[in-house]
Length: 322
Image (cartoon, rainbow, N blue to C red; front, top):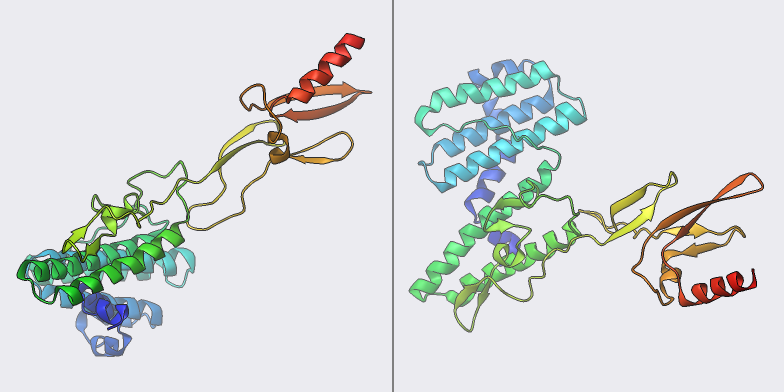
């Protein structure tokens, strides 16, 4: 069985498929609650309305348990994603048309009463797609971890059930580790893109991506193969206006970028890199000093990161001759 086939068994995966299955949308367009949405003749908003209607009906059949809570959370995030994409970014849906979607949600909540799903709009929607990916992984992981745990407790088909669990977490560990790149210093530990809960967030890879140990027959959380996502390497450079620029990540969060290398230009037009200057023996901790010299009325700016031993000797010789 492939990992993809394995994932399709998860209740949340089935729910997501239901929400996105356009083949059943037509059957909902005749519903009275969708009448005003269908009347807009906007295919995009009709699809969103039918997806919402389909998902809400599906989750209402479940009792008040974790599965229904997960479905409700996903439906909220999915709707936020649709709004960002089609209202805010692409302007394919007018604000007054989107109001019909929110009105549909409220109407469904009234109809289903005790099994309702409350609407919670995400405050930080900048990276909503990343949050959805992590949320779906966390829910599916918990489901398959429970399957593995039951197999361990009953000593039944442990090898198959739990090896599939490890393959699943291996796949997503590699995926998230590569996609995240590194964390900037400014990233809050509770950043919505990387944090779902204490036991599922990208700041703690060993907890978030556990594995099954076939020797001890246990699920382990401290596997040495789960390398943490590192903070971005920072450089310190001086800008054109003389201001110091700190926390300039050599690799950006969610994508790699070339490291920034500070360079200076001498009066002869030669470019000297920060790296080449640091090769010499330094007499003091690296520092950046800006000196402005005036020669024949022309101001020149020279940047220093430290004095080498050769530099000190040379300076002494010049002073002695003077």
